Image 1: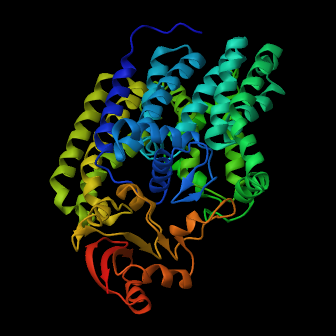
Image 2: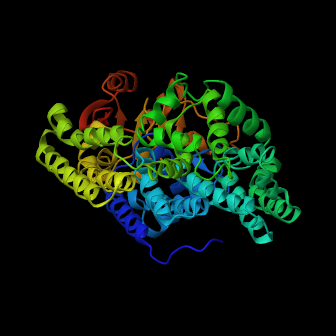
Image 3: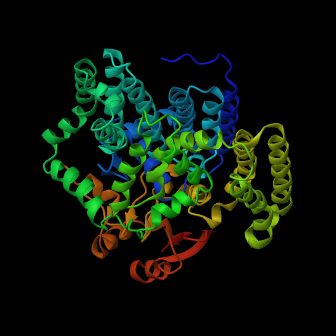
Length: 532
């Protein structure tokens, strides 16, 4: 591998990045539905000891392979069943992704300053910054992709021996066990396309590299799927037909967005995305690596897919950061950076403006105004210490971190105005009638309540669940599907807590004979003490 300098100035940024994320993680609620879902599946794995078969609120759940749940569960084993435990290894994964962004940037550019700035540009991307703090799969797959790209670009440059092949196969296998074939889309597909006209990528077909990576990929990535094939009828059609084809071609997952959704997300990262495009077109690396293919091919697949989420684009962040910095570092005046400075001016003013526009931020007006002043001071001070593009990247990155700090203070306080139910769950554990009452969700599906109560909370007449892989009726304790079963369920319980909306509490009283009183209110649902 290429020799890099001994100084590690970029590590200071990563250290601050990680410390801020960890400090906030414990107090930040898990948000529905994504964080609640991932964290609860991992919690149930810890409780039932079955790390092969994910279960979600008591029902077999094969939407994702189990590796991501193992990582979340490992964090909770270390730090407890709380937000810090659930987020810990995601934050560590973000740090690793930034380290390999630096290594990849140096491999591509042979320039230390560009490589350092690539870390800052990637870490301060609003998409990467936000997803790195979310209990979900996207930050993990991002980390695997950038490490795999580092190995792949090294192999294209001639370092394509058996060790590189084993490492590449291991990364593909882990990626496949995280999110199925998506890792192939970001790595093997564009590299194979580039090999058609770029002789460097034909090094990947060196028999030693190719067959060693293939063998390790098969050993790591396929055993879990083979186990399911032998134990669950219909699993192949479920994965290929429902999870892959239907996800790509239909709106079965309710994630349909207009055609301009992804372009809007990327241009929402302005100005860095525009600089990325410039870097892509003018590729500083003399076309040696055909980096445009590693963006355009996966992006085209996402663009034509019916299922769209902004977080699907996070694995692009390191590569786009490298491309943006490679362009910005060549600017020798502030003219090309005009829109970048304008964007940052608006971004710096945002906290102070929000404090006067949004009523729920009024208690934090002084904090947010001070944030704007501090951010402006940081931006101007750093900008004055460096020339042109490098100064813009460094100033922007540290300014974004400064502005993120009050979000960690304000965020937990805004739980009632968001999809967070930690405090509601805590209220449901208050003793009534001299005992801890059972809690249920009625016409509401809130897995984070199960997570915070550390027990599976029954969901009554809520979201339709997939039960085709259940081998017994145990799940029926937690999944009450219709009115008839609901009547039987409530008849056996003279008092309990019910989580539901104001629109449905009358049904609980009239249909099931309870008198209900509000115990805790949120913007979305309330906690009711119901008794007869």
